Image 1 (cartoon, rainbow, N blue to C red):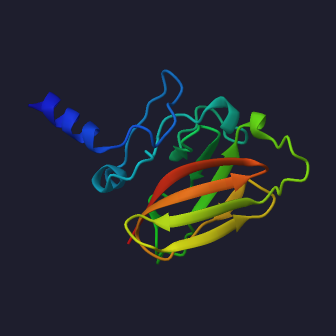
Image 2: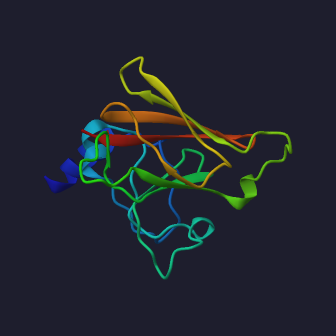
Length: 164
């Protein structure tokens, strides 16, 4: 019966929504993303080598990979929330692979995030000046948000869940 339950849950989550983590890394899907069917999993294993600058030791912080694996959102506030009554922020550190630096010197460095709330026509745009880096990303409603990310001539997508 347990094997059937695992197969059933795995069948409800799209497999194309996140990059495959490096071999040997522990990963866990959050309850929120499993419950909503949101495509990108929140990983809890170690960050990949290309994204762990500034972290010490075997840092394990919640993070989400872009679908292409070229960017990762490190979630300092997890779960992300539509309203944070405790005075904290929805702080996200965006880290792009070093190999994704712009081949086009005139491409804007700003990270542009076009967020669409799943199942609605709601769309908002957020920007991180200077490109991937630290940010506070608040979205107007709880739910699963599809993020189209664009920076320095590169693009990726991911889903993030914002709790009520």
